[in-house]
Length: 540
Image (cartoon, rainbow, N blue to C red; front, side, top):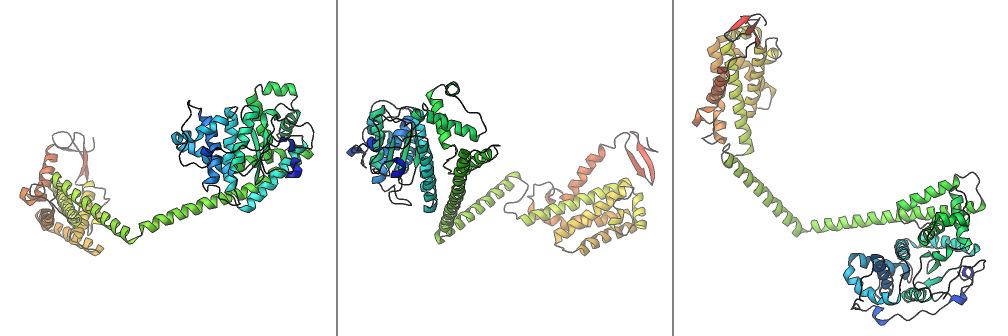
């Protein structure tokens, strides 16, 4: 590190009173050394925050001040424990301070007020870059030691490249909270505020470059044109640069992108995908220069680190989620909680049943506390009554079918689908009666269904009265199931005449309406139509 920066003195923040970008290497920052100011006592981990200063700073200033204030508190509160000793207070403290502002802004404003008195940022862009760096550093600190070492090695190579271009840092800060604050104070004193910085993390030190100075230098333009070459774009002249980036904010943004292009800090899948896209762009150029080869090598190293970093992050997130789920299950499965859940489930089931009973009683359709099985049998019994009544209705209208069915059919399936719609309808009705009868009486075999169908069809051999008697007997045999479930006021209850009488009344009302004029039927095998007074031969 000392060889790269041109000095062996890196124990304190290195800040120049009037920083300049060197025109030629090598760098020598020994003359830039300035002892850090002592951290005020009220910033050194005080339990009671200082009173807020007058005025209301902007949100970016809040964030930046909170970040730098967090540097001081982090080292004294144990927040700096990590993979290595003194683990990056510069980043961990900054990120912690920024989060304090975002999450608990009123409390953090009081804490940052004192820091705001002697540390300022030149622009919102400068504060933005500081916070962005802090969050990236926080992500890097979560990596394994192997990954952190690989990143530090890649950063050293980036510093070698910047040195070869003649760029000098304005500050070199160690992982010491006091040094970080001193850096901010010294830059504020020498430049009127912390400028927009591009900071390179090399493990236990942070080397910062003033992008506002880089943007106005030949080295900055060379760095931007190197990025443009990587992207397959033409180089810019100083005049073109000034036209394309007319103000310092846009120039600083261009410098930041150029310095970061081949040396990204990959902390998530999106930044990994972006880096791969950059690599593909450079590799796709027709003429690959030595500088492009260096950038390809740098990007590939960053991608290699990033792929492992993203995987480590995903594995850590999955492990954390699994631990949280296991904790939840452990709590849930504690004996006292299992018992509580059982009581809750029982109370819920009881409440639902009581609500259901109340709804049934209120509707007047069911007796109180009637069971689901009793309801089902009552409804099947009503289905038998409806089908029997409909069958009698067809035979009353067409008594000729009694003899036709008796002489031609031995089971209901033969009748279903017959060309005569009335025969087909009777076949369906008889089958439905047999199925419902098995359900009411608890028959489980198809043989029971067939036996009921056979008994009903045999009655056709003895004339219309025998058929009516057989159907009526089936209805009467299941009326008790209706009475067990329905209140006495219900329309199919025996107290109201029973299910058979109810469906007969309903069918009679429908028959009184008469067939529609032009309605067609088959009578004794011959087509007929209704003219409003009677059935006439032939189709209309």
